[in-house]
Amino acid sequence: MYDKILLPTDGSKNSKRAIKHAMQIAKFEKAELIILNVVDSVYLTGLPEEDLITQTELIMEEESVKILEKVKKTIKTCPIVKYDESVKLTTKTVTEGNAAEVILKVSEEENVDLVVIASSGKHMLDRFLLGSVTEKVVRHSKVPVMVIPSKDNK
Image (cartoon, rainbow, N blue to C red; front, side):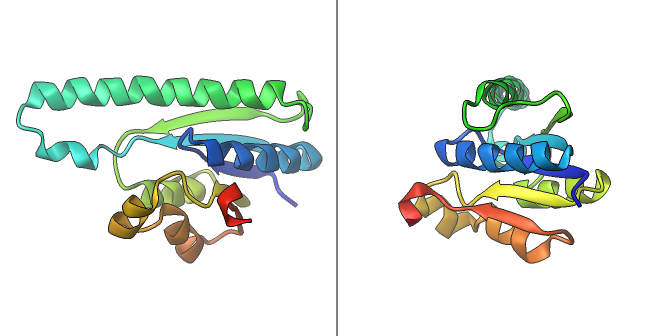
């Protein structure tokens, strides 16, 4: 049923819950799991110096690589869902654009069958001011989206 599953992650605690669900589905379906981290560089445009923008982008890209490696390690060492070599792990970092738009674009480009995403990795003020990435993905996705709520929503 699912050949490719997209797991957008921001490295937050809540996104770890989504990792377990995505891995369990990928393992059961023997699907490819595409792990995506979006570095939203839109907020850097207000910085005064071009060098500062470039340096900040490099730091954000390095952090993104660390997040993706941490997610892969979490997947491979998860005691609840034993990692299986039948699951192909692919990591992707995108450094340009709005997070929700990038997730939707990657979903289409990669021809994924399912998106597994945490409800929010940001605090309430960010969600109010910027809008929820998850909410935008759910509204505009052409494939099923599984939303993993935060523990606070129980």
